[in-house]
Image (cartoon, rainbow, N blue to C red):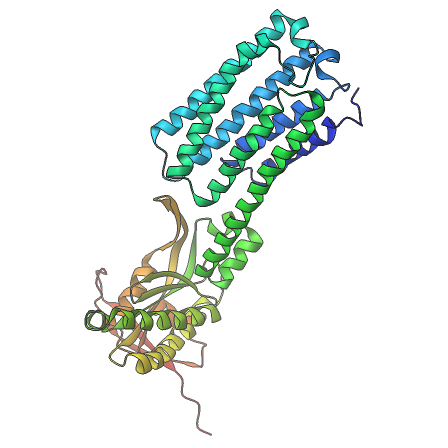
Length: 435
């Protein structure tokens, strides 16, 4: 029976519990899964060690083989976790990967030797040892070179990865593993009364590194959230990243604005002045986009692409886009008149079916919008004069009940990339009715 006063019980439960937590909360992460498996295996191994209070003398061969198997599995997956962390991102040098693979092969050899030892000499393998170190001279001669070489190779690979290429956040966990590993490994050969203490110290060191890792990742997430509109950030918080970034086809409105005369301005003015004007311009655009639930998709020099209706659905996206565009023209023109009078702002709006979602490439995810409205909004913005807002016919049709917006239909205009002339509508604020 399991002795409830045995110290292996709480330590085993804590170790296995940490593995279950990692598996449950971060199952989709290919890097975290081997770590979870390692902690689970070591936790169950500790519980088996505490079976009837003394593993060597009172447990049968079957339980002993299970314990040795779990011990090797825990070490194997611990090395696998180190390999995935060290080889993540842009890829690792072949030598780092080779060192990890060689280390794992030696761990499998170590497991085979242990199993064979239990089958060939069960009495010797299961007998109790005198002294603090619970390993006989024969066992030390057979097992130490194999396991020691495996751990040495893994350690060298981790050190090389730390020095050369590992992400700063993952570096925290690898350093914690290097510090915790001696305590965890020494526990394998020590007298039973020392094992729970050594395992607890090693586990706490690693958990401290994991917590620090999560803090750094949280700080990164907080920093990256500044590049999302408040609506997108809220959707990620409530519904998760996968829901927010799923790819779908949707009717929405696209607003594109850019500056008139910016190329000459950037060429003739001091670069610090240019950056200062752009920063204020972006701030105005961002504030107005947030006010109407728009999502800034791209900054391309002086051009800004704004989506209204994605990733947050907006049933009145055309109306929002029109009011957003008019505010951009008015407030942007006022800003430029004060900061750089030689510049102007033109705005284009287009509405229609657009595919939105994420594309994966170059080691990153990019939220994209693809469709005719994106190109059309950019062309209308190019055609607009300073302070002018031009919309396509579909946007204009959606605004027929907007009494605050005056529409001026123009002759269809040829636009680059479109085979036929496009109907264009100029938008303005409606003047108040005379009293």
